[in-house]
Image 1 (cartoon, rainbow, N blue to C red):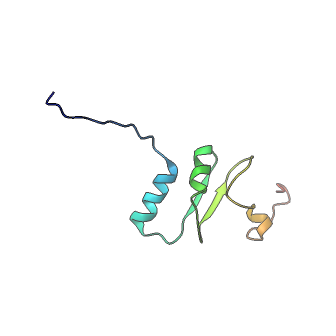
Image 2: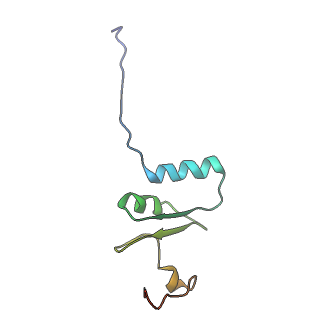
Length: 81
C-alpha cells in the first residue's frame, strides 16, 4: 500500500433511479410505469406531471385512483373495481 485511501460502497439497483436515468437519457416528456412490488411503489412515487402509474394487484398504492374510477377505462362487470 502506498498510503492511499480506498473507499468502496455497494449501491443496490433501484427502480426509481433507473426510471429517472431512462427519462433523462431518452428525453422523455412523460413516463408510464406499472408494477406489483414495493420497489415498484418507490418508482411510482417519483412520477410527476403527465406521468402515469399503474399498480398491479391488491394493496395500497401511490399510483392514484384506479383508471375505471377516473373514467379512463370502462369498468369490467366481471371484475368490479
